[in-house]
Length: 311
Image (cartoon, rainbow, N blue to C red; front, side, top):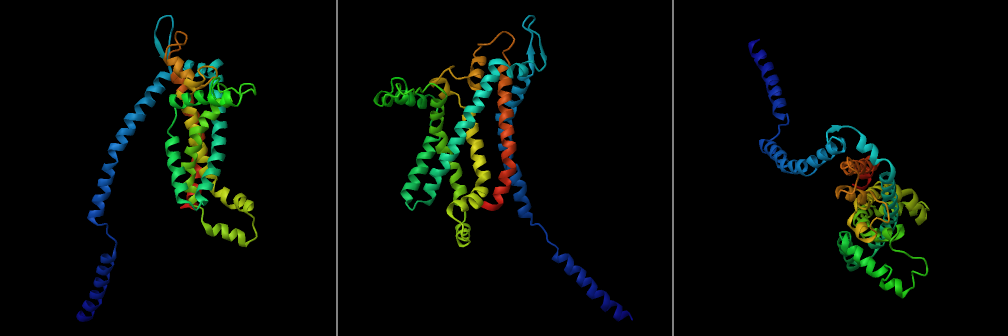
């Protein structure tokens, strides 16, 4: 009996030992790497907190700080935010949204067509040339861009005089002229943004559509565009934000002839406001952040959906 009991317990003990040995254990080296990776993110988080967190808090504090013109006393209230949504400030905000949305929509369509031509091209040199030029032109803006357009399409510009554009009703210093100037850097930016997504479209999808009798237009309508829709919307958000925040190009080219929120903020920061409304510029900045946040709220859910297809 004693021998049988010992023999019975021994396999059970062996089985339990085998079970414990088979349990997965995280190596200490991998655990140390995880901890080290967590500490490696600390400098980035500190930089984000200093570069974005502190200015954001200062903007919020100033936007809701109201100054009494008579006594100079300050208090918290919504007078600045209310003022930023009325009169000339509201007109400037609506003008910026219209200009940004219109130029971004044209940039998305034009950039998609150009990027598709580059992706389907068999010339590697053409592809590299277009992408390199797009990388340069996407960062070309501000006063140099305004000067280039004034010298080319201004009232005394080269093409304006050569083609008699003034007699045909052309004016660079209006809505259409500023849109054209914005497209100079928005279209290259869209090419850089949408090219990776176009490269993620698998050739098997096109072949399957053709085998089922679909035309090229039907393939783009039912397969390619639904997959690319989040990426296109993401490109629209990026282009919208770039045009919405642009200041130097508009200030140097059109001045105050077109109401834009960035120009209103510059005037407020320069002191060109009524007494007691010095913080309206911070309220306008808060309005810009809210507009950008609403656009991003639409984009992020669709981006997660697209990632499953293009992964």
